[in-house]
Image 1 (cartoon, rainbow, N blue to C red):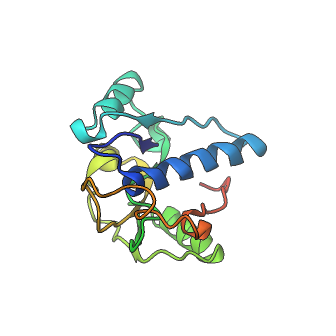
Image 2: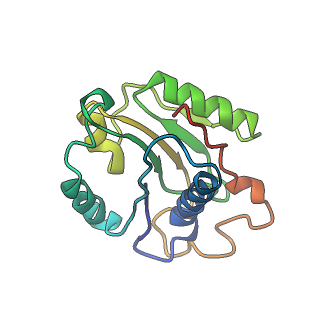
Image 3: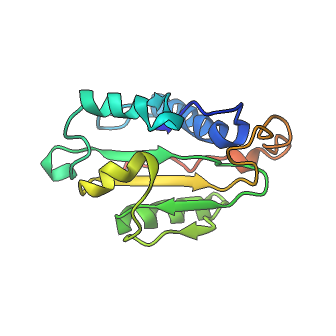
Amino acid sequence: MTPRSSWWQSTAERGGGLVCWLETLRALTASPPCCDVVFTANSGHELGHLGLDDFMARHRGWERPVAKGGAVWVHYGANIGAVGGQLSIQSASDDLRALVATELSRAGQPPDHIAPTTQVPTGETHDIHRAGGRYLTLVGSNPLFHLPQDRWPQAVPASSPASLRLLPVSSSV
């Protein structure tokens, strides 16, 4: 999942997550996984997550642990690939954190920060965390975060495609 709207143009804030979301869709289309995968890119992020709340209302229980019918969530958060940004991993699951840290490092893009499993996320994965569900959030930082100056081309390093490189999709997630 990824938000797709914001207050401004938000090139770096939303663009990297959308690129990762699209690249994941492309990769899974080329090599279909052995389980169902649902993609959601929601509007209303800046208005209390209205789009995600609507989606969750229509898919009750997906925030629960997998053993109780829940899903594994991958959240492409804000500012992935922003100029001057850092990449963080957040998950309450040690195995998901380790898997993604390993794959990002293998791709030459190690995370700058790995949040402790006890850190309660804000935003999209907050309710999933509180319900004991399984999630992984990739989120960056951005000196232009929530500012109207977050515009093309200064906010995203177009000359460096590696800054938006996605980790290889693994069936072990």
